[in-house]
Length: 154
Ligand code: SF4
Image (cartoon, rainbow, N blue to C red; front, side):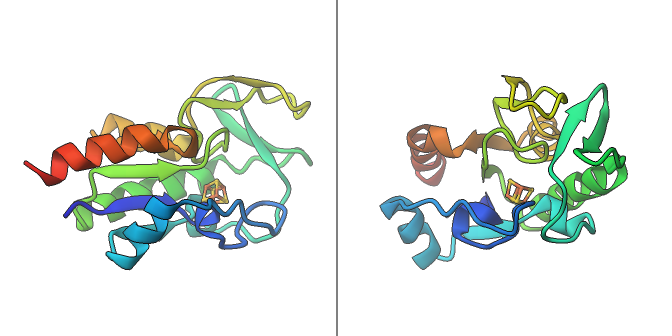
């Protein structure tokens, strides 16, 4: 049975920049939790950032908060720790929160702090994809279910 790395905020943990969660209501997620298939992880907390914290966006290879602070190092540390966890626990699948500068799989904000989304990946998602982890956003849950079913049967 393959494990799945899941963004902590999708599991209802209040780790987002605003101190809230983005809990995902899903029967399949409930099943995975019961099966102990889920490994919860928040790269930004793991990277040493507090909660709540100013929102951050990727801008020209850097991650900058709305207050102008450069938090690239913390975001990179979170990505490194995510990959280390996947390697240690042989995790080959991830379900990450879309549009986050850490977890975004297909879109991120454009760095202007004006709510504009553009195609792109967060630092952790990119690190995991490069390492061969199959990363899906919460908007791609059916695709992840299919990929896991194939992997579990092999
Ligand atoms: S870094 Fe990822 S897990 Fe942590 S709050 Fe942001 S989206 Fe959720």
